[in-house]
Length: 119
Image (cartoon, rainbow, N blue to C red; front, side, top):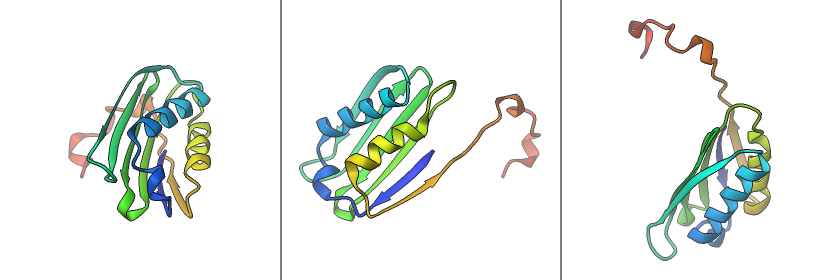
């Protein structure tokens, strides 16, 4: 799932410790297994980038407080429930707008497309 959340209060997008805790809570709500996380703040009141590495894949976030915008990527497999992770994030951020793109991949088809067919 790729989620773009806009109209988010800037203070919700610029606290590194809070965002790491939020994504870890979201991963747990999705039934995922957390392996490690790493977050980086670009400065006081500036954006943050972070990733939570999961046994089932990963979740990442990039924030732009000055634009009231966050991009959240939720990649999960197995019995995980990525929609539950997104619900936790949406509740915490209270965005004015949220667009979500769900990408479904078929592991059985990986490697079956001739390289010449890739853009």
